[in-house]
Image (cartoon, rainbow, N blue to C red; front, side, top):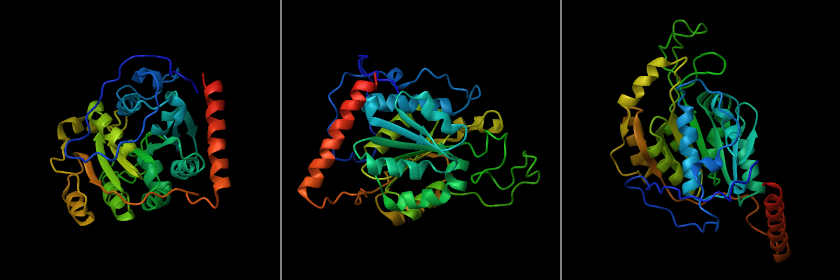
Length: 314
C-alpha cells in the first residue's frame, strides 16, 4: 500500500454518461488533486501485449483520480484469473482472493468498513461460473459495491478454454473441439433478474468512455455491475474486431425493470452505456445501532483506523 496523496496535479473531469440522472452528490475528502498515475503501484502488469485489461486499468485509475478518492480509502478485491491480477497494479488496498470469491470478500469488507469505497473485480469465468451464485445474491442484496467484470469469453490464464460467455459453436479449445453446444450466459439479463440496481456495459478499447461509466457506477448508491468487453488477443484474436462492432446504446438508461428487460433482450451484446439504473434501498450490515453508546464506539473505531492508515500508508 502506497500513499501518493501528496502528488499534486489536475485530473480531467469525465462527464457523466449522456442521459443518466446523477445521484445525490456525496461529500468528497479534501485532499490534493491526484493524477491517475498516483493510483498505480510499482508492479508491472504481466498481461499479454494488447490485452484489453490494460484499458480497464487505465480507466479505473483515471476514475479514482477524477473522484478524488484518497488511495487509503479505496479497496479492490479480486478472485482468480488474468483480470484478477488487478489489485497488484493499484496503489490502494488490495486483496487477491480465491476463485469466484471476490464478491463475498468485498461484501464482508464493506460490512466491516462501510466508509471505504469497495470495488470487486474479476473475469467471466471467475464471476459467472464458480462465482455465479455469489453474483446473484450480490445483485439482490444491493450493498454499496461496484463489481467490474472483464469479459473476454475465455479462460485465458489456463490457456484458452470455453467460459460461460463463450459462443456455443466456438471450437478452438482442445477441451471442446466441436464447441460447447451450451447457450451463453447473459450477464446483463441475469443481473437485472437478480435485482442489481445499476447495470452498464463498457469496452476496454474505449478507456475514456469506460472511465465515465466507472465513475457513475462508483457514485451510484447500491450494487453497480459494470460488464466490460475486454478482448483476449492471445486466445481470442478474432475479438480485435470488437472495436468495429461496439456502439453506443443510444437510449436513455431504463428506470423501469420491464423496459430494461426488453432493452437488454433486444440488445446485440455490443451496446455501450448505462442500461439500467434505479434508486432502491441500500443494504448496510449493522446499520441499525442498538444505542447511542454503540454508535459512538463505531465512530471512535473508524477514527482510530483512519489515523493508523494515515501514519502507515505513506
